[in-house]
Image (cartoon, rainbow, N blue to C red; front, top):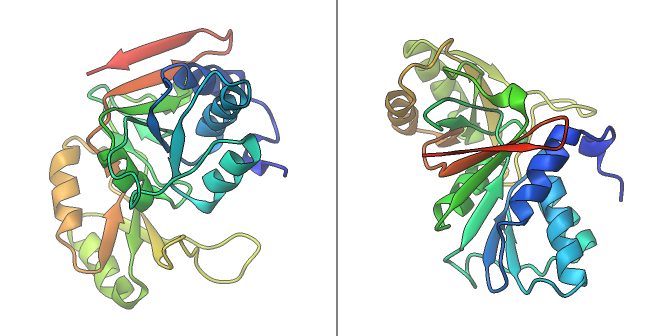
Length: 232
């Protein structure tokens, strides 16, 4: 299987992803996020499982992470079978100095949030470009198709600039693993992420938004292979 997200290897992402795998111990139930950085984590966990260094189970957040985990040899379970996770590891589109994060560039943020909230410890892996003093990237919002127009109108009413995410190599909108649409909404600088998160959650038709407030630590990989760890 060719992982298109890793067509060009990134030393920053690789350093962060592999370091995060070192945090996992035998007996852990691990939440496995989605994206190019955490793909390195999943593959490293698979290597350790194959070499009998680890005895773990993983819960995936998307079809993409499921495929990578199966190929890597990571034993999988579900939240129905294992509702309490030891650690969840995932990437981010951007995070600020208070460890508020925005996720959802891969349209998997609803499952990612459920998995991360099911874990005792939520670790984000990143390259330096994702770090910001203040959040400013667009917020992905998963929306029921039936509620799209109401959600678009409501987002404009609270100062957002919403755009329905279009699919690539397919006519029409992106469809999530849950069968919903994604609206990418820009708000400029987000100086109060918690306040915006509360407003988004109150809009009927919104399944989940991409503002994450439960990050415990961020692992940043650098080009020279070194890492920086930021904790709350």
